[in-house]
Image 1 (tube, chains in turn yellow, orange):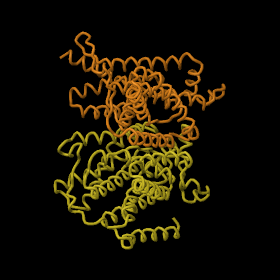
Image 2 (cartoon, rainbow over the protein chains, first blue to last red):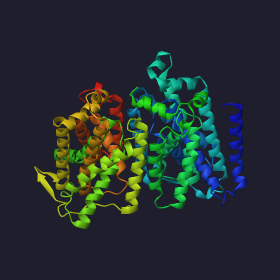
Image 3 (tube, rainbow over the protein chains, first blue to last red):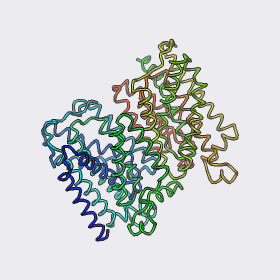
Image 4 (cartoon, each protein chain N blue to C red):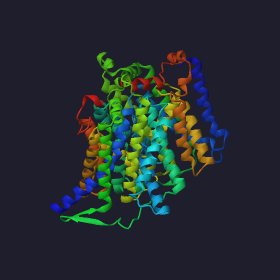
Length: 328
Length: 292
């Protein structure tokens, strides 16, 4: 990242910080929109780390998101942590990455490509069903009702979500630019060659999986503090995997800016559709997904000239996918 | 006790065949196009609605509605391939997976808006009729679903093994490049496969309409179960898909019997993960090398 784009990033972050003071968070929709967009950008960027950079297509992101939310809900409802407790956020992230390491070691060492995707899809479902079955501990199918009287304003949630989005971008940036990123990209490009050059493939795969899970778990906990009702359908919903995936693919997976652009754009589309077409908006969201993939399969960042991409060190999902389709 | 265990086994086999036909559809589509078509279950539900409305408005018996629902599904399958997947069919599993997801969201919500979210079931005069064989109760509609699944599997197997078109589909799923060299057009093969997969979804839809209650959103679980059946049975083999489905049904029913109903699904996902990890080519796969 050049000095110019770093400056641009700082300006954008500063602008985002100023938004709630310009628009009244009680009345304006803008703050809520940026709050949701930040959560989605965090999820999309963390997924980007696993799929875009490491080439391991996970469909189990909602397992980590939901687990993060439940960690906060279970502990807060038992008065172990308080409202917007930093310990809660950290524990949510830690629990999610522990799950990622626990299932990542067997899954990532045994499964490749489609099979890994299917395996992680199963993980999300298992988490949802176990949560329903645990009864009193997790609140069963009805979920946990949290004391919503503690809610004052969206401002703290907004800043925490914004911080998480910046953290996700920073972590991805750091990992992509350091020797870790080189290892991850080499695993994506050719696993056998990476192994032959002395890279501990499993270690790096699990590392990126765990870091992504940490971020996903934290964003789940932020939303749990905002929604106050943590129930399995909502928090273990497949949408928490597929929307970030779509954002990442639409923006351009394996690039730094792709998930940010995709996240902002799609949150806008979904929110506008929800606002103007409250009854039938999921139809249009579904339609939009189809159209976006059909006419823009390489992502928005994939439209940029090749040379610029090389400079950024990113690879559009298009190349990754054609490679995959050839069965390499 | 033995009688109860046998009863559970029979129930498992009967409900498992439903997963089986859904799995065969998925397996055909995955085998030739590498598309994980997660909208398969939603297509089944759409077909079930077709059968339901034919019964409500025109009084057509669900089993008679097969002659309308299955051809309609075949045509819809051709439309889906030509309209949605043709362009991106070889762009890798990701765009196609997302298109399938978009289609699932689109169909689910379209059905929700048009038919409301109320659970439906076809109430025929024979819906609660059950045969008793050697003290084992067999529900008539489930037995019919079982027979339909067997007929569907048989039909697809015959098509793939004995007809020129079917042989072309098999050739393309085994090695596309060689198939193209002998003059097989990939798009034609893909269209046929998609139509077949959707036709099976139509058949499964009729069977679902008569045996289970369904609502617009029950398709996703069906797709997941079909994927589990596929993973158990092995991708790309027709008989494997059916056997995988039956095995899954049996496991689920025994799990529900030993534990409680809610844990049955957890057990089936655990089986799924275990099979993926220790025998990713499936339990009934004959040719291991060609399927990955």
